[in-house]
Image 1 (cartoon, rainbow, N blue to C red):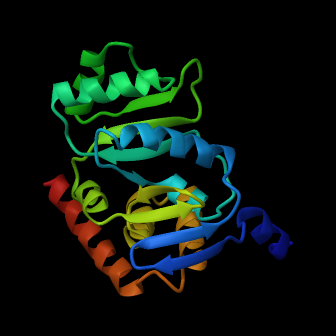
Image 2 (tube, helix red, strand yellow):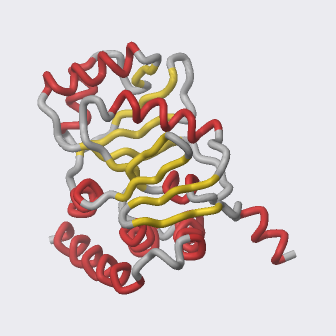
Image 3 (cartoon, helix red, strand yellow):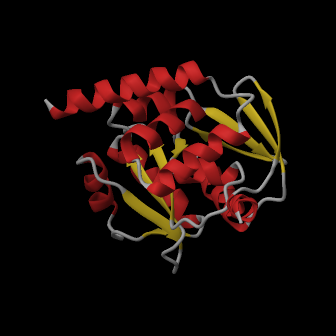
Length: 209
């Protein structure tokens, strides 16, 4: 029973680690292909880092998700509008609102917007401007994950693991963290995870003051 459970939760993926790059030998899933398509449009206009659940999923964790979380730097209204126009031309729409000014207002006030394939709601990309220390860290020190000829940038695995264990702490997030620890055990730095765990506690206390 335990073996069957583990097999159902974890898909073994052939991985090769090189510096800040991870090379995966796997067939891209439908979700992977959607992410590659969207990120291809997004990165023409902005830096970015993918965080949270999809990081574990692209590394072989078998579970569903309704959204892919993407952090981007703060943009001017003009920069943001150009980005949204291009994304719209690529076949996507904002679920929250059709008005660019309203989208920008949500982001500027610390909220997120959700973007999906036109006419669909899920899966969607939850976009937000970087505002927390962990957001800025995700943007500053990403790693790049390659699947065949496509790639995406994700937050450091050590930061993702620590954030899920210290901040989010749901059963799903704890399982995500376990998965990252297992499949990337030869790559991740346990001392760096502990460093991030300490910094996350400090950041959380700072925000509470």
